[in-house]
Amino acid sequence: MGLGRGLGARSSQPQRLQMQMEMQTKIQIHINEVDRKPAKRSNQHTLDPLYEEIRILCMIPYNYNSPDTAKYVKRTWGKHCNVLLFVSGDIDGELEPYVPVINSTDTWTLVQQGLMQAYLFYADQIDWFLRVEPSRS
Image (cartoon, helix red, strand yellow):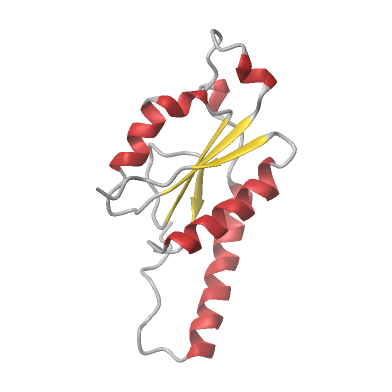
């Protein structure tokens, strides 16, 4: 499913707003079709007694042009999060669950959409929220 490739620079403000609303509707339809449960408790460490007691959602907004940092997080310390939520402008098969934000690399847009997703789908499943900003070095 393609999510488009951004808004035209020559579009007028009302046209851009209309296009954004249409794309947001398409994304919302796509989001509603996705199972948001963690894959068979894949992130759970049975040796970690705090895993069940303190429920943490870790949100990682990342640039879809360089997903390596997000992948390293998932493969390493991300396993300690009860919910590991990736926010990006493009789909990456390894990084699930995923919040689609139409071709955005703007940090505020990614964080805003990630916060909305976290609240809508995980508010009753978590006690703490951790936003992780990928390194820019």
